[in-house]
Amino acid sequence: MMAPILKQLKDVVGDEVSIIKIDVDKNPATAQQYQIQGVPTIMLFKKGKILWRKSGIVQKNELLQILKV
Image 1 (tube, rainbow, N blue to C red):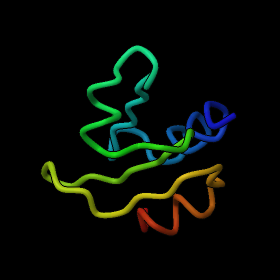
Image 2: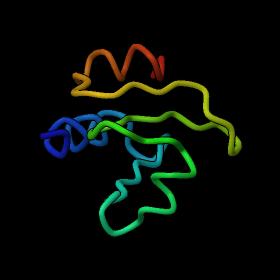
Image 3: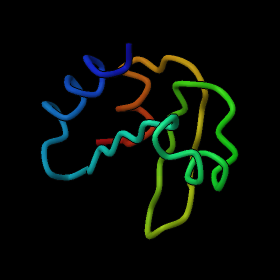
């Protein structure tokens, strides 16, 4: 459900932001490392540190607000 929203976001932000999707079923160690319990979980990183995270659907406008692009 997040794929079309992330595509719209990428269309707006271009190369200013990297969007990486991880399948938690295929990468359980990563899910455990970041304590992901709900899907989808959106996380914002800067220089390897988590700045923001939220579980559930997040709309493009909310993501743009958080990114302040």
